Length: 99
Image (tube, rainbow, N blue to C red; front, side, top):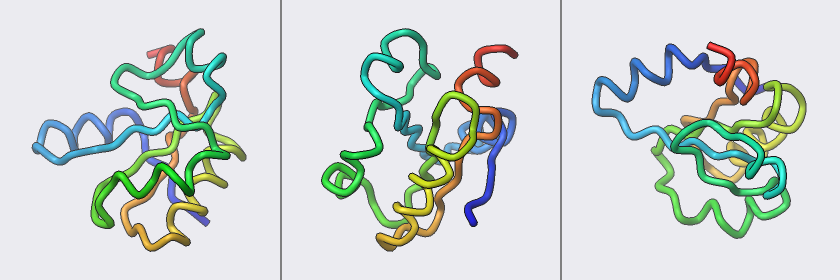
């Protein structure tokens, strides 16, 4: 099972000059309505073809609406492809934007 990461933890990593790739795995329509600033839209079904754009040691955070099944499944898929620093955003887009 993948590990959650919080907004605060992501901001701390970014302040330490770590590159954090925020991937919004929702549909383009969901992304257009609202998304975490700086997140790339990469719908879940396109991960296999698009994840090759990242380095194996990049810190990757998968984001869905609430940090539940979709982002956790996407993080597991990416980890299975050989990536090691993969998380899902705890509380998802709603939680990030609510703060």
